[in-house]
Image (cartoon, rainbow, N blue to C red; front, top):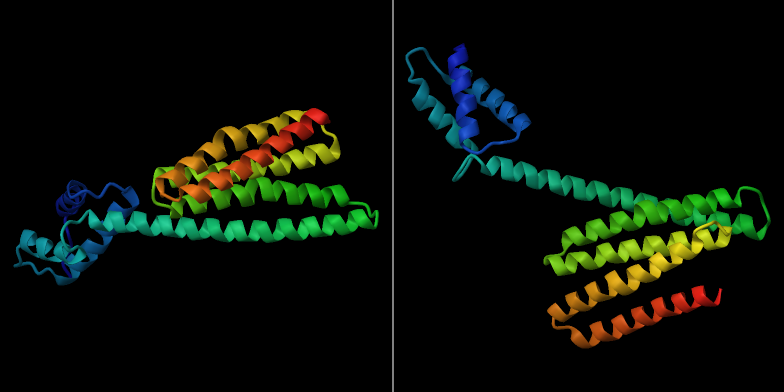
Length: 225
């Protein structure tokens, strides 16, 4: 079997880099694969350059950098589905913990706060942020992407505010004000702008009015309290 020289191996690696492969792991994986093919097919009398060009041409249709684009795309899809699995698992666990905590609360059993705290933490810090990120990644325009992100932020703040209020923790008023501010200053404008861009103006205005009314009611509840 033909053995490639160090000079030939370095030539292949430099050529791979010149052709637009920037990921180091991908560079060396591709190098190893090409070297294996060349050492299996090359003969002492063959022209290395000709056989190499014929071999590398098998890896792409137009340009070699297509391989890196495909690798990045596959990695993005894999990360997307991983986040979705974590999101669903955290949502199911938080719902189960909330139901269990409510049952414990009804029957005055010890451990209520543990279940409620776990449910609140998972819902506000894991489930809702991941839901906002995965939803935003599925949308097209930047205006549309902002809506699920701000909605997730507002929802997380709302859930945390409820926990602060139930447990009478210090800073509960500030948490409510953050929730109201997020709804009025971030979510409502983002939703109104995205809906206006989609030409779905009547439904967008009505939903925005409901959102503003809900946030205003929360603000008045804080002031009354």
